[in-house]
Amino acid sequence: MMDQYRTVRERMVEEQIVRRGITDKGLIAALLAVPRHFFVDDAMGGRAYGDHPLPIGAGQTISQPYIVACMTEALELHGTETVLEIGTGSGYQAAVLSRLCAQVYSVERMNSLLAGARKNFDKLRYYNIRSKLDDGTLGWPECGPYDAIIVTAGGPEIPELLIDQLADPGRLVIPVGDQHEQELQLLVKNNGQVDVTHLARVRFVDLVGEYGWDD
Figure (cartoon, one colour):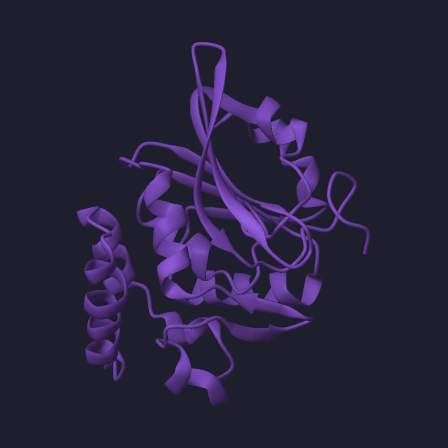
């Protein structure tokens, strides 16, 4: 099948990703390979590779390409990991992760979004992604621990249950703050110690659930 967006995707990676300092070769290859336009409405296909988030329905968004890259690079994936994603959304972030690790587990609280993401996973043959409908702030404990966890919504704090489900060593990326602006945080667990690094100021949709914001 001809990929009419290949050139614009290459431009996205060069101008928005590489020029901003992303150097992970596997991640760059994944961003070149995953057809981002599949994960937005057909009417927005021409805007899918722009330097901005886009609405995907139900008050949710697909993140700006650079933010996807920044969060993914912070996980330092090498291809053998098991990764937990909180907030499947459009499915684009999970699709990128699926090319960089052994297994992705993704939790989404909105059935309409999950159904659309699953269709794209099947269409694109991303068979190493498992997903379920649930409160993401609870994680997916029966399939853990996870080498890496990524949270694609902003919460008031890092849910303790997610830290508990993180392997040692392990890395967790999450936006933390109020409902208007958050700090993108990287939590690294190593030898029983937990260190948190601040990566960037960001603005995400709300992390809704028992250990997040109220619906």
